[in-house]
Length: 434
Ligand code: UDX
Image 1 (cartoon, protein in one colour):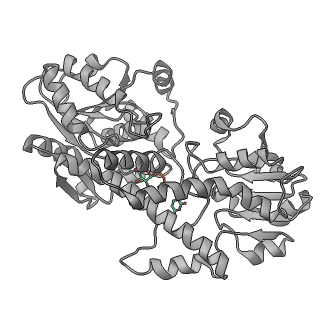
Image 2 (tube, rainbow, N blue to C red):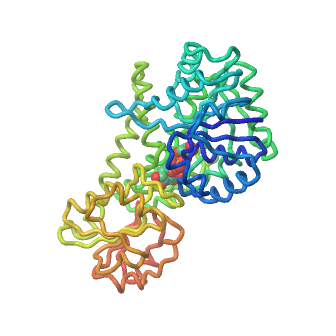
Image 3 (cartoon, protein in one colour):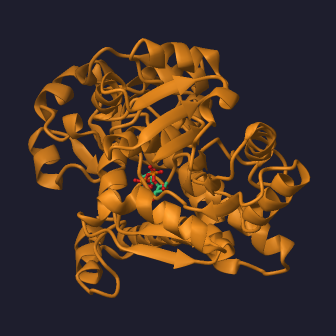
């Protein structure tokens, strides 16, 4: 099967490498010459465990290649996946589909034989219909059809998620699209991945519903954490207590500083916009979005409370800047409002992140000081804040940290440590919801 993938971002590059690894013939197309140069040198434009090896292997085996020219990639392609970015549009939160529709126009003009055009990017309901309309308008070959095949992979676990999905979702209006996608994913059936067929609109909406549900679940446990703090209960035990109920499930019940990343914030906003366009008052998702924004904004205040109420003249060391571990992605990271809030409050802030500091430097206030290793942030600090739960922060020598500090506060926004461990090291422990 010959597959073309447009866009070598997270979804495009991982999908391309994995499809090639299944034995398909894959060409990835990207307009960005800098990205293509990196890929040609065998360097990855994103930091994702296992990706570099997978890409290099499949390039060496001749199943995976990269090009800037769509017209060169298209001949004989049976499926063309659109995996370009769909960022939030400034102003109204709607997904910006400029890149998607530009790609479709280009495909329509260059395509010589009918193919299945598949949206892999998260796109609002009705995008497939609009793509079909553009293809017709631009005179794409007769028999070219459109399907929706949303991707549910997580950053940091992208390859495992892609190869062992909970489900493969295909939204299509015709048998040809269903047949081609079944053929493409056949290698995964060995992993017992169920394939679900729906209408195109249902598939498009299902992706938003999944992300909005997970965002709601996280916000719910964060709200329970606030209640636990107020009444003197333990949210970790509460999460286990509710999570063992099969109807609730144990995953995505970790309290923290609020969700970030490239998907939940963007997709919840886009879902609200869709609901609004269709005159539906999406009260739950709306509340989740506001709750999460408020939560992220409140984290600096939480550190101030641990320091007796004021940040003025205080030194704060931050461990972890990326929105979650195993990625260098800083998009919508809770560390951003945290660091801004600390600096605005008059604190001096030092930070360490195992891989995210280069990306962080692009978005963080200039005043933030970067350290070369985790213990560096403790130097003379009044408080330490664990903001991202990197594995390498789980076994820190807390006594060594304490020794380097001038204060005693450990604000653990990810509940990595236990109170008695911190107290044994002489630290005052401020976890979430315990
Ligand atoms: C998410 C979805 O999981 C994935 O299916 C979709 O395709 C893209 O969006 P991702 O953004 O990579 O993936 O990260 P995820 O692991 O879901 O975490 C998102 C945010 O939620 C992070 O900031 C994380 O720290 C936070 N989170 C997650 C919690 O605070 N608590 C949890 O229990 C889980």
